[in-house]
Length: 109
Image 1 (cartoon, rainbow, N blue to C red):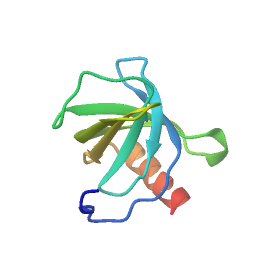
Image 2: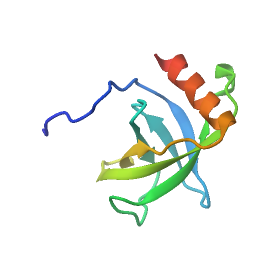
Image 3: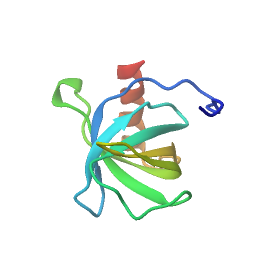
Image 4: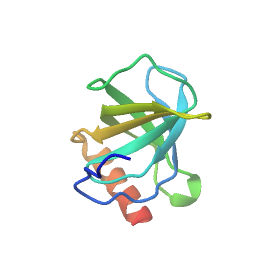
C-alpha cells in the first residue's frame, strides 16, 4: 500500500451522486475538505487531471437538498463492483452549494 498523502482526515460518507450530463450514478465516500472518493456504477473515459461535476443527492432524512460540486480526478481504480475515483474538491463558487456541502461535512463529522 502507498504512503498516506492526505492533508486532512476523511469522514466515512454515504450520499448518492449523479454525474451531470450523464446518467451515471454512484456514491460519495470518504469526504474531507480537500477531497473525496466517488464509487461509480460504471467505468468512465476519464483520466487523472480531468474535472467532473457531480450532483450530490443526500438522503431525505438528512434534510440537505441536492447540490453540485466539481472535482478534479487524482486517481482511478476499479474493483469488482465499482469504478473508483479519488478526487479533490474544486472551490465551490455559489453560496447555496457551499452551505449544503458544509452541512454534509457536519452531518458526517
